[in-house]
Length: 181
Image 1: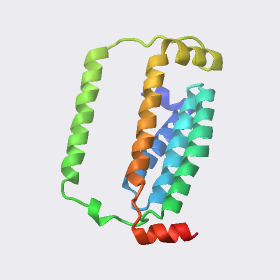
Image 2: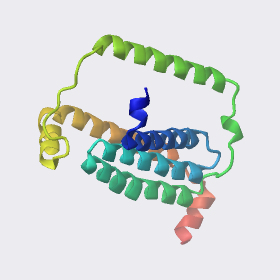
Image 3: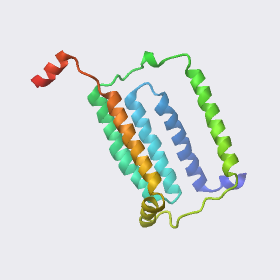
């Protein structure tokens, strides 16, 4: 047990993991939407740090550039432009949250148990040099093109659904005021 404590990389891993866990919990429990978005930046930054420890610098850099650099900024602008409520939403407080948390924990346990039973001691085979952009591109657009496209359509559907849910119908008075601008 003492052997893994002597390795500095394990301490750095533990630090990133703790930061990720704390930030992830604060993302979903924060009362303020802007703070939740900023905690999401911390969670994504910690994830990028873990990727660097795994020698996947390309994935870490992509995560920082795309998610932290673009998506979070878009979230923050969207929150500020739509004038979303920043405080606690009383309508979301419900006694069944405890039941939901219990169901989520039970589902996590069931899925973990099922994954361990299904895969057991199976080993993951690599596709080559994981840090090479060329190998990554060939894998994504070769062997894994169907899952890649399914994920892209799923993200597109989530984006369209989010826009549809966030869009609010304007009253006639609001439409007139908007047209007057």
